[in-house]
Image 1 (cartoon, rainbow, N blue to C red):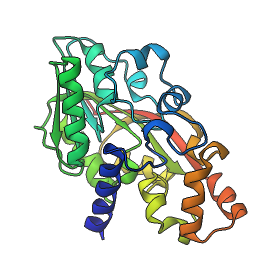
Image 2 (cartoon, one colour):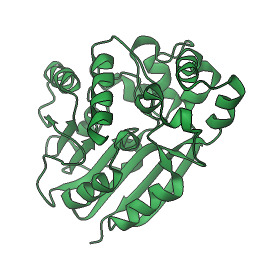
Image 3 (spheres, one colour):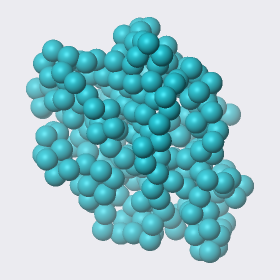
Length: 276
């Protein structure tokens, strides 16, 4: 089942990278319809106009549910890892923050995203950024080599979040920081919605209950887990109607049932630390 889910997610994000599709976590020029452009989404979830001017064209696909770079308080010379780096948006922002003496590694399991990110890096002449094909449940990164891990609306897509947090803990240096924006649930989704492929690729059906998510972090060994902010997930708003309609029809839900389910879907911003 886990491999089936990964295949569906990989195919879905491959289509997004090629500009053939969109999802609630990602987008193209008009993510989720409703007039929300990739730039509009980025500004809505916490990126500044200055941030958007600093990244190469094509790096911002309208993916994400927050700004983990802002959570991380990056410093020059740090080594940063981005879990599920997509076209490289957060990596390029992080690269500017850590400077030429720092290093940024992006890991993504979708070959089309890696290819797009590498092209963007070449275009931007970003020499302190590299992109590696791999899964966040088995990171192609050595033990204890990372100062800060970023992740933006990606961990919810993993069918094995226990392994994701264990891997994150493994690669962090003692005292290293995990800065995450992700989707969690306040209560379980209706079974039909939880089994929807569109809702899974859209960062909804794979989301964990908030208390379970935080418990997994602590079980992996993370300390000082701090919830910085919790907000409604923008893609469950009326402006995302075209995609919501697709999800609702696939799940066989009424508009009211989907509206009630949407109230439990939230975007969580958090920081955690590996013990020194």
